[in-house]
Length: 362
Image 1 (cartoon, one colour):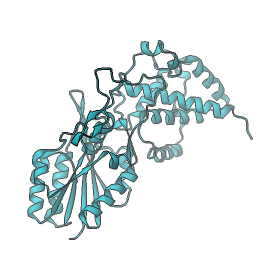
Image 2: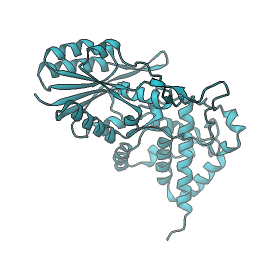
Image 3: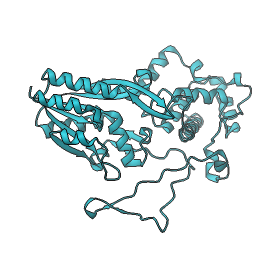
Image 4: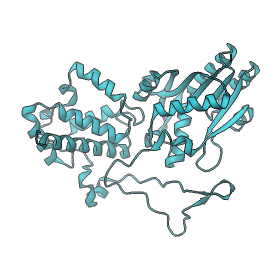
């Protein structure tokens, strides 16, 4: 059948892109235009194989295999099928389970049924080697795409690379059309230190061409660091203990939301990138907007007086809401860095809502 199919290992694609663009494999450090990325993959696959696209299979992990907002956006796009494995935490590291097995099964089934003349693989997993070999025996041309490695080394199985019929590189320029490093969201968080005198600012790349250095990861500031930093007064780091009156006086978003709004929120969440600052801002805007009119001014004023602390019940609800976005983590395992960004986003949303309420009506 003269057509092409693309199988994408999202963990490899986005993890390698994050390493290249930020120096850290955490996907939460990326801002991804999924619609643009899918279109780029489609256009490139058709150009390089010379065949029309049948389908893109997007393989990814998710907690309990529950689709996350990005998966819900992807699976309604034309010619895109999402297949989910399990996302688990082992020894403090998040790992995918079942994704490589699902890709192998899909690859061999497509080849056996002669569903396509060309199959594009975006993966680095050597476990797919038997599937690639079997697909070739069924007459399928195998194209392997690699994400540019941050250090110029390989980020794919050497045997997998050797077995592929065609090999192509997804370089920085191609990736950054749809994938960019998320902007630092928390005001006042110290920037990575500049290279010292003994640290070269430019490293030699392939062929002697200059390559910009990888950004040094910023240390997550402790509350004491923030307290000593004047610009960080606006960050309002912590949520413990503190509050606006007794805890039971703080209305939560869940109690302020009608069943109709629940469905509307789910639709809106499809457009939320999952970047922590945006998540916190979205949560705060909904909460402030739904406060009872006769209580809103007092509650917002009391909340402002309570900074740098968010009331514990409201902060707990914020973390539970953030856990819906698989790129951030579960509410019990959200990193300190993401908590900083979530709370910074929360206060940004509160500030915007307060200003909107105080603006004169035209």
